[in-house]
Length: 96
Image (tube, rainbow, N blue to C red):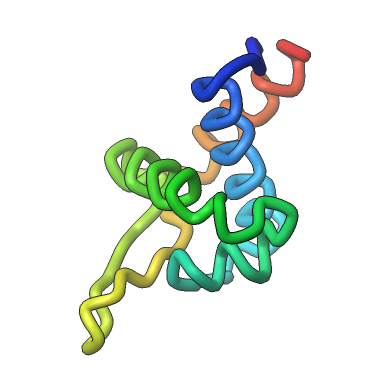
C-alpha cells in the first residue's frame, strides 16, 4: 500500500477507523467523537480527513450512518459486511 501524499494519508485514516471497529464492532459515534476518542493523534486538523473516510466507508456499504435530531450523522459498523472488511484489512496489512 502506498502511503505517500494525501491519498496515502486517506488510506491510513480508513484503516485506523476500520481497525477500531473490528476491535469494537458495536461502537457508534459522530465524526467529532471518532476524531477525539478513536484517532486523537490526528488532532483538529484530522476532522476533514475523518469525515472523508467515513463518507467513503458509507458509500462502500461498510459503515451505516444515521442522522441524530441535531442533524449530526451517527456512524456504526455494518456487521453484514464484516468478512469483507476483515479481508480488506488483511490485504492492506500484507501490502506493507
